[in-house]
Length: 380
Image 1: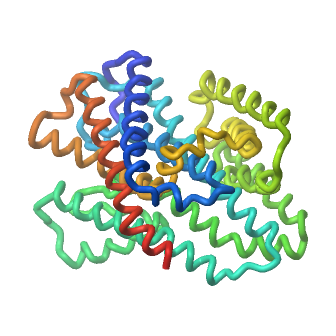
Image 2 (image 1 turned 60 degrees about the vertical axis):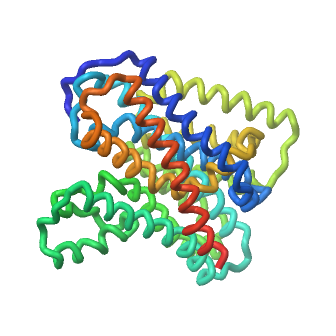
Image 3 (image 1 turned 120 degrees about the vertical axis):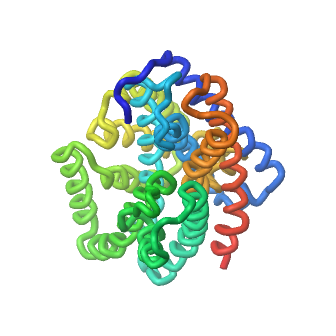
């Protein structure tokens, strides 16, 4: 990323992010009214978690949308971002991913901590049917976009075939550079999916250890994760643990005064996030402490706003949206760059309009992907 950049006011960068966020939720509101399946599939007990997942996906997109020009390898000459702006966007991205990890941790810890027996064959079958079809569909779309962008094909067909497994590997293998095109630019978000799959693989081991050693095993996992984030200064696993520690809380109902306390704690943490969040390492110990406190508070209060139809519907399509939004932004801006106007010279309003249109289109395509790719396999 170029270091010598012209600057735009921070408040404008924040306003751009707010506009993009609004253009994610507005089409989702319309689609949730048109298609009841987007909200009726949500389980009542975890409906608020679906809403939180939807907000997390939208938050992650706020990191990618403003940086699309760099992703296109076209250095902007009118309104590049200050380091403070870039820190803001990265803060949005890391916060959304951390919520994803916490949600995964709490849901699957609830399964293994309180179950007497688990059918692991059925468990992994459900995971495969839930995750693989949507990811493979996204990879096929990425191949189409990459072929269009880097046409004509200069490499031999055999060398292209050899690279396919790494594209479809859920991030477990490095993404290739095919025909001089780096697939990280389209499906680079799969790095977090690789971590999720590793977490799923560890679950039977944790289950066995918990059955044999009870809570000593749980304490061991927590100590390992906390030591990792403290000693290395950055850890992804510790956020799964943050969610897992909330599994017992998920099973309880709390009095009003406890929930009010939760609101106060969550509000205080959000103030700290707003003032200092961008100064802490994205996956460092400070962010872990803040996220643990925030997620624990949310588990206690289960905010009603996260159960609203629009937010829940966004959570329903969040997996497809997470996979598709980067390549949609990439394609929309590249089409404008090639056929209409160079994206290296846009005024801020034009750039914001393009980014908002990209996100709205990504929401619509994600809804189609959920209804016709994800959902049929989920109900097999």
